Image (cartoon, rainbow, N blue to C red):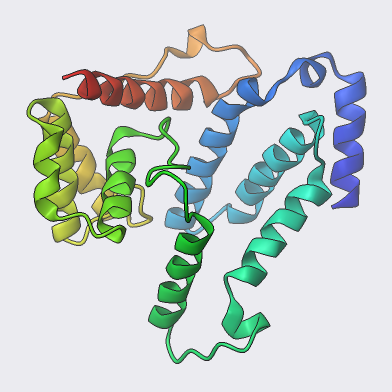
Length: 230
């Protein structure tokens, strides 16, 4: 890990490309690498390399930042894990994984106390997973199912209804099961949402597939933004 930090320090100092990067310019690469980890898990091969690529993005962002470093990033997640596992680091007793999950959600709710219900929901995520997260937040807060009618009609309502039907069948947008994701993609195609990748000739040589991943997410975001206006 120390070697990685040292390499990033040198790249950030001596490499023109690495030196010019910002948090915003690196986002497409982080998105692409996360999907490649998912692909490696599903294929059963290449996971070590793909996790290394994700770790590179963490190290890169930590080096770009002015107000924190990778040690601060680690401190934050260590603190969160300790707080949310009182059955390991405290005196809480649990008998099952379900109890662990219930405690985790209760602790999260306490940490969010006083905040807006949807505070922290990343609005830039793909449309289906965004709708799923909004619905989960609303349900966790005790919102009645009929409240979905407030979404209105049109594309926005179709997205909410689609996610609800998928959840009823055991599917979770953004989940790890390839079959569930394929089913959601097929349903999305039925709504007429077409995803086309940028041609290879239009990508910078150093960008690899990142421009394609960024465009796919961007199109999903556009669909969601359009839905909100309807």
